[in-house]
Length: 333
Image (cartoon, rainbow, N blue to C red; front, side):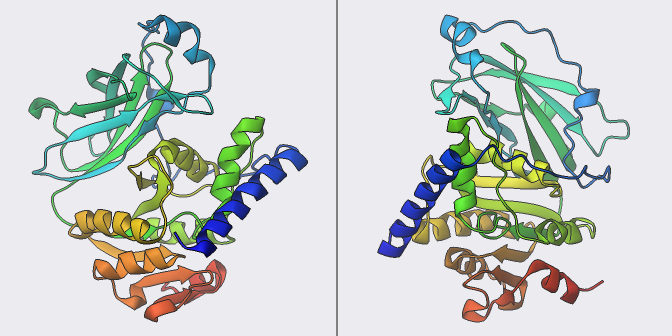
């Protein structure tokens, strides 16, 4: 990590601490989202929750459940011929204490069904890291289309929601980085996370027109991929931020490690993931950092399909975005 990157991170953390001490809670004022089918919708009104069964472990039942749940389901893309699986991680509290040795019920809602409804497909017990890895049996394999997965914690009725996309060909994808691309800078995520320790609500500020840019593609049949170097344990918070601010539904992919990555590590992470989905049909990429630029070029996107906002706009022949409203005015109707 360069000296400039280190200084920037220190300033970011200090800014977060200062804001949390000085300002009162900041509440998001987000207009209601449309009912159009490209928005996040976890079909909660259609789900009939089973009775809570209480946790197996005494500590989980009497101590851990008192803390705020932070459960994560990890979105996935599969080809129709791939093995299918579901990954999730279950945690509580500001310090993300793992939920160990407890049962998770797994439900699916398949949007492509003629009359979709919730169906229980199995259950799995969390391991010592609070994780489940559930291999979907051949009899329950998903067909082509989009599938909503609900991971229901049997002990207290909390849950995580995720998506699985199954493809029998290509689909049009647009990739959006989040920090500094949709949010106004990389510090916003740090401030939002650290606000938990003061029990305040901070809504990471987004660029003017960022929501409209993602909606532009979603309304034209593109699927959105939100690709971020945030660690895996911020997947749930990332999902909530996107929903709270009215962004269209998309698959979220975070860094699989627990730390924050930047520079060459961020390039490798994003490049490797993009390589894995490249054959699925990645058409455009949005970012703000040199790591975004290098990752997009590494998987063959040309400069006129790489849109960069911020201080690196236009670097290495990419297409500069001075502002999203101005950028949107140049996109085809």
